[in-house]
Length: 75
Image (tube, rainbow, N blue to C red; front, side, top):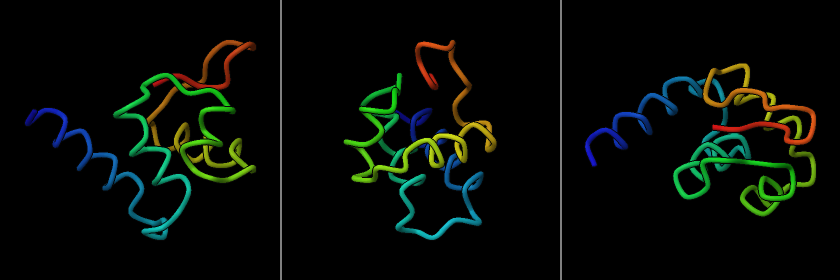
């Protein structure tokens, strides 16, 4: 359990420049329940339709990595 708390804290640090209510932060938190993310799931987690932008934020922060052409990103 401590490892998950450490990972969550690391995500928080990597996303420090974002608003506390940003969809990218909600998506990062959602990774703990759903470690593999596609656009449809990201829409559900973030309640946002502009999910590719939020996925890109997490990719640039090193939180998720880009998947193959059939899946946008995977944790």
